[in-house]
Image (tube, rainbow, N blue to C red; front, side, top):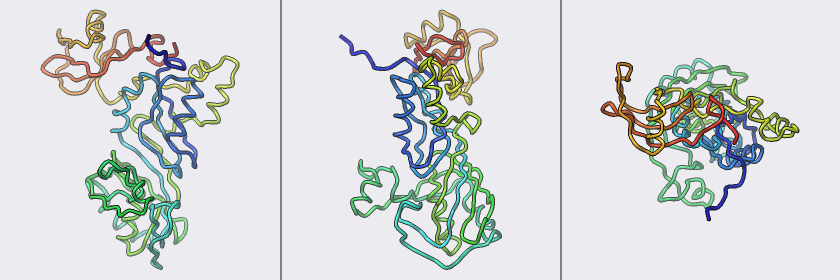
Length: 318
């Protein structure tokens, strides 16, 4: 006899405004409990000392996580000059110092060097794996950690303000795999000083921005509504599953084609309105996502099939 999953069948995205001091794993667990959801995951880890946009996928939305993680990310972060730490933020011990304090002109002059496709060595205390082990676990055990430089993409890096000689505030738009802590470290070295991140807030992840964010406190208030967990979704805290797929084409299917897709079978795209394209897409029927897949040689091939019902938006509790 199949084991029944605990919790409710809830599908959609919660865009949490993660508070400082909480791990991403803890945040996911809190949201999962508040919604009494069967399944949950997140799209992009935020360090405990960071705040801001943490998209949390519930139920069928977990099948779209990769599309959010591969999207653009925007951060606002503050760098303190004159000290470098072992972790490149305030959690680590100071390992190098400098009396040099760069001015706004000097900072602005180096920013083009940190924009575009660049090579970056991740922090020693990071989740990058070395022979199957997390770098931060090895570093905490006192082992030597040597990480290779990796290519990242920084679309934009702007100096927002210099509140005082010791600190500078930046806005960065970057791609997957970028460590803002490492940007601070490397900018400090390039400027002839040292630097580490003292504040970090993520403003955007993929299609989600500050307008979508909700705090844990607000979720808790909604959860304690007499109507129960359903009221949390009804109050707009739950974004539809397909919100994560904003950047890829949607293909409308007939009921027969939708039935084929639910069985994992490919569908030939016929008719004069058939799209002339190839690559990622998702199929819908009646406004509800049916499957994620690829268009190739005039056919839609499903890779992940959704099990959604209820509201036309695709977000629902059943």
